[in-house]
Image (tube, rainbow, N blue to C red; front, top):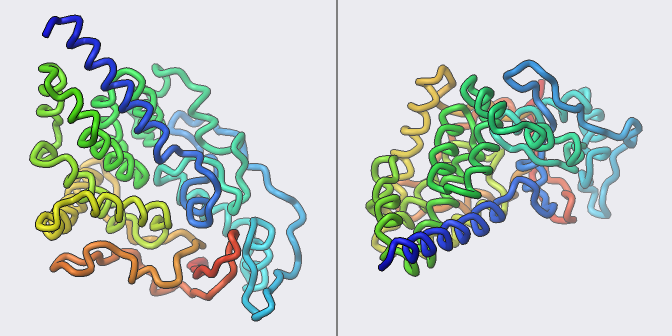
Length: 340
């Protein structure tokens, strides 16, 4: 194969990875209940000290939260969430704002209707105004959001570099970046690899994926990493999208490899915690957000349940209360309130 032919194959592969990986699990997704809670957050003060635009919120939420015909509280939007928290003796606005901060600090940078955050006011909009040199400086200072934006940009010319940057964001405290690592590994293990793996340079890049263990099976690594995200982030980040994604990855994993992947996910959780500790971050995420939604029967939907390595959450919910509510889509959800 000529040099120009190899270059064309690699360029085609990289473009395919770009379109597949950048668009899938994008930060701004169609609104679904838990994706609202997890993926859309308010701005935080960047490491540089300059403040991003404050989130826009309705100044007049309802005083009395509504209930459905069964007497179940309706928490379908920001106003109803604030009103519901107010009736519990909390400052609804401050509680919701603190929850939005929790998600932003863990890498979820898009808009969030339930938490009262518009797309223009989301952290993502701030990072999008910065050039790569500024993003790199912020990343070097430990700003996981800036690192994620650099990773997003890298997908346009070098998705392997993007993978490395998402791994760096994990060490800086991002939970969302774990999902993106899984997503990227899956894209590397899919049809694009099968179509173009004969290109020597591409084969070398795949082999040289720098995190130990990826090269033994990229598809299994994608599944193990996604399960590690569930273990690491706990109930506050496990939404329908993530559960469906993990189920799809499990379906593509050889039956005899599922137990090994579940064991590997435990190792990866330790790996992520070690990387965070080296940067002065807590190795485990145990503190929940002040308020979040969760599926009513989450335990029944978790992966690895039939193995010797079931998912065990480390999130401390001992001081949280929970109740059944009608969520943004009209379905039943459990509302956890962990604020004092």
